[in-house]
Image (cartoon, rainbow, N blue to C red; front, side):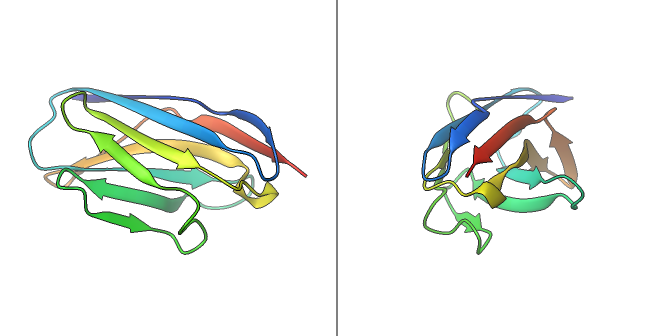
Length: 115
């Protein structure tokens, strides 16, 4: 089993920044992809960004250039630096780990961006 715990959400004004962190523990193998998804009220969960252990990244178009993703393999941590936040970025952000066809989710952390 894998456990994922997010932190760093909160309330911020438009144009501000937040940094999300996710700590992974449990049966984590050497080949995996970690990332962030989000779900806004009344909408489906969507990809924000992912990163492989080797550092290959993938971003949703809506966050490219604003939300760099990074990870610390030694600590099994993944981070999302959210800059120039917009009200439409308001959502619950979920940490995700994918390995050998299985996906694991954190409980989520709420990010609210006020206009």
